[in-house]
Amino acid sequence: MNDEERRDSLADQAAAWVPPWQRPTPPAPDDAADLGSETPEEEPDTANIPADPKPTPDAPALDAPADLGSPMPLEGPRTSKIPTDPTEAPADLGREAPPEGPERTKIAAESVGVADRAGGRRRAGQSQPEPAPELDDAELRGALEAILLVVDEPVSELTLAEVLEQPAERVGAMLDRIAAGYTAAGYGFELRRAAGGWRLYTRPEYATYVERFVLDGQSVRLTQAALETLAVVAYKQPVTRSRISAIRGVNCDGVIRTLVSRGLVEECGTEPESGAFLYRTTTLFLEKLGLNTVDELPPLAPFLPDDVEELTDASR
Image (cartoon, rainbow, N blue to C red; front, side, top):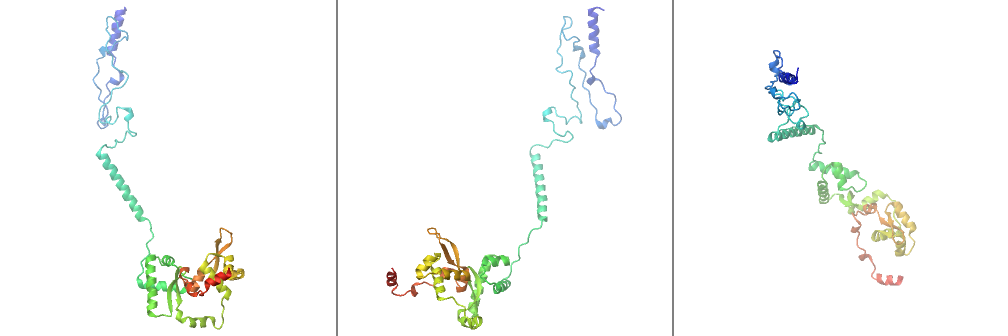
């Protein structure tokens, strides 16, 4: 066989050869209609495919397809979801891609609404503390009077409001009404502010009877020195012991210890210049005198002698 016959034989074989992806498929079973069949495209003209990659004078070179080894895209309903660009392939080929545009926004809003409603139901199901019931005026008045009868020291409006679970403003207004009612009715006791709180006290006009009942012939009083020292502390507080001694003209260390042990005077820091202890009156002092603050102490001017300036000059 010469060269020309060999080339003709190779050309015939190349023309008769059909690629596997272009070969006709055997007929499918009866349920092939449901699964979908691949429709092969028309066979290309294989006569134009050169048998020899090098062109020859007798067989001029023809343009070959760009990629003979890549399969042709399939058509049909089963392959319509396969993306042409691999980078845009969804994570799950079995599910449809979410809609775009207004439809997708609508779906997202509905999902958020469902989540909010579910969260609201969960929150509604949780147990929350119920607010305390509001007492009427008669019950609030009775509760306050009962508490004030058992206290051993003045109690503040805030403490009463916390115990009764009522607003402090309402408790304060009711205490004022109770105090005004006791005064108008002329009871032998009264409700008044003392030491930053409220407490029931006997009226001053009945003090002799109360004193006679309480003391019963016994008298436990402060000495004159203790009263003078307590007065100096009350009007000059905070004050040091040396200052008290200078005002009274005598040593007051023992008297100060007595007043501290009685709970009428207490330490309240030190003096910056000398480091000496400072003393002031206590809430028990205000309670015993029936005062709310030390500002309610009577002024000293009416009790000073007329020749106070002469006495001061003489002491110098």
